[in-house]
Length: 313
Image (cartoon, rainbow, N blue to C red; front, top):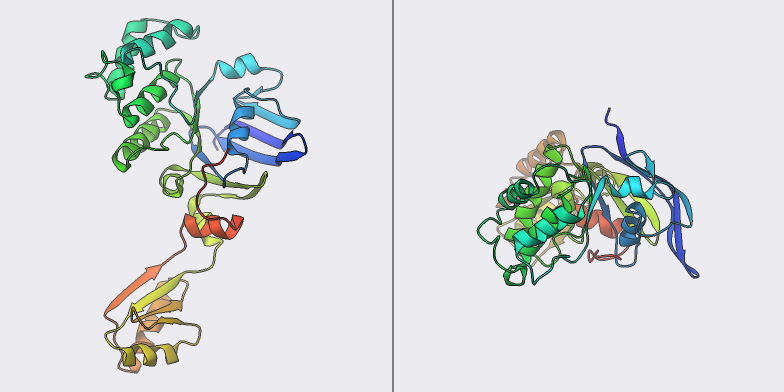
């Protein structure tokens, strides 16, 4: 069984009369990717700020790598890396100079600083641009440099607060591979994101935060199974066939314009075979056949009642 990298119990935080976090409990296993989702204003970034010692909680306990963030903040800071929503690079310095600055400022760094810089430039595919000012970098390159700077101290617990916001799809997928590589090397990732696909692709476990409360936790597949809506989609060649099929399945939903029929199903082979056999008994055949299961969009909407714009503060 994996040990816990982060343990949060009864976490509360308010700004004036507004409760931002209202009793948060969560555990992040070491060597995994944990993703926190939530709509705008849910409290995601506030959670990250508390966990990374940037903000004090009103009540509750938070332990990171076994250290209490309230009483052992210095020890926590020595073990973590934090990448915020906006790349914190000095645009007047080159990529190499940005990394060297972090090496010089980080007391935890031991050994050959130049080698550390060169290794990070190579790891993040920034060697060719190492001597160029960061101001000339693309958005994806800046995010890679920002993450590389976070890793200067060889942090084992890394907080990524919406690390791919604003990146093009190719750069986003490059970042995904980097994140997977960090975990393969033993790091623990605490990720907030505004992209549900990103959480689905990366996270071992997901927690959904809404109005300061956790409304669900689990693996992506566990969360999807909580939501009804698995169905078989059949497309027919004619309206007559569509109508005939609709009469066979009382709970089905027809779309006359698209000539499609949605039939509720658990997606299992037994129920699918029964459905197809019934069509065959009535000499009906579908032009197309597919099984659709709920995705994280459906989960998010069902749990929060919000659309999937989840870049929360």
